[in-house]
Image 1: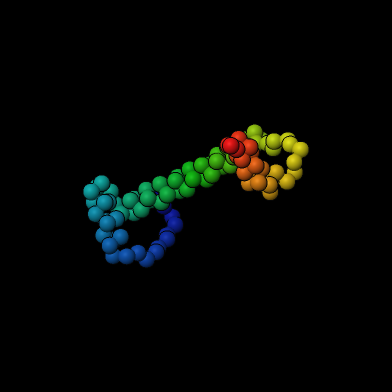
Image 2: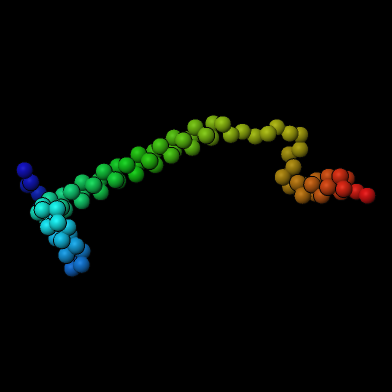
Amino acid sequence: MKTEVYSWRLSADLKSSLEREARRRKISLSTALDLAAQEWLKQSAADEDDTLRQQQLQDAARECFGAIAGGNRRRSETVSQTLRRRLRLKYAR
């Protein structure tokens, strides 16, 4: 049994579309609005589940990430110089 009342303003186009869809489905406008609200809540819950699942997947993947051990701590700063030197040695004439 419905005991609560809620009201909101909407555009004339949206109201007409809702009434048209309710007539097409042979249901009352209030039932159409109930269905729309329920569907929105389900979708919202599904979106939260998707967000949680994505976080779980990222956490699991993060456990697989690591660092390559090397002796040169400044390798990322000197990579272009090192690469140029290696290319010169490889293609030197």
